[in-house]
Image 1 (tube, rainbow over the protein chains, first blue to last red):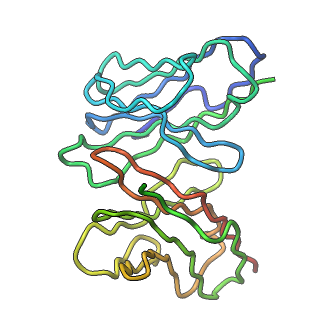
Image 2: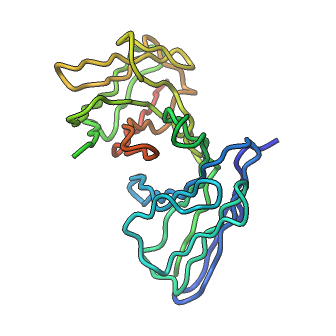
Length: 115
Length: 112
């Protein structure tokens, strides 16, 4: 039983298209995240939701829009894709702020390639 | 500003040799520090963490790390590596209530 699952695992698309990545966790955590890992393996937080409420919104173009329908799901929609959006996007979950000791549970990643 | 720096982008070692992956941090407040491992085509998973107390922390798969406040370091060590330890290793620091800041990663390659 996968704890944090993302779909799709691979996504190849043309510049200008719109695409979505979905994430679900069955760990009962209240907090979920999107991280972006670039081609040099650098990992940077994009967004975080706690119980459906946005709590972290880093400097990310507004073409990226997260959505959390419930605390077990966090989706990422990207409009007007650009070449620089090519990366691996990781979903993660954790306990909420009061209980957060730094352990994140990551999905396997969604590799987005923009042509 | 709080940050972590991994001093080596790649570390090649022979199987059964010891290894040390270096991490230095910058912070003006108390730190929580972590090492995560990313095996090929997988997400990251926690190896070990330092929150407080003993400066020597032990993690999974025989890894350990030592928190050194005077040198602002948190180096990861293993006395004898295996082929299966080939992976990318990330040092991280907790920033604020809910955020982890990751280092640039160190690729550990084990040669037979």
